[in-house]
Length: 100
Image 1 (cartoon, rainbow, N blue to C red):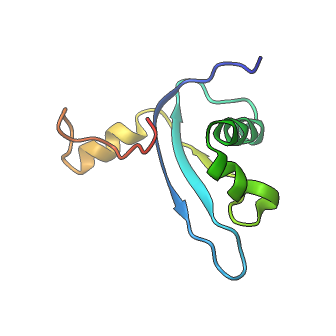
Image 2: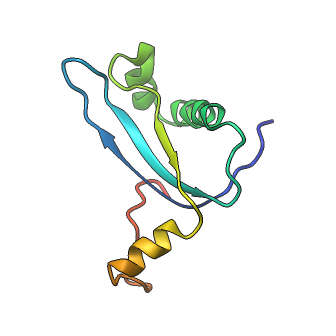
């Protein structure tokens, strides 16, 4: 069984495909405790997404439409500081999280 990794905050968005490259999902994640190997974590996330979503799995087949997700691990409080700079702290303001 893979280790449990907790994310304090995250958001994800598209990387659009072109004639020369596949698209992907790009994630910005603030881990409580970052994974030892971000590539291994990315593969685990990709496998979990494929097991939950057959459309995603079909688009990931041989990287033809979607490539492996891109994960950026950011330091603690990055999301909080970003919201603070934008004067968007408080319950009525949220960081966009598509699958939270």
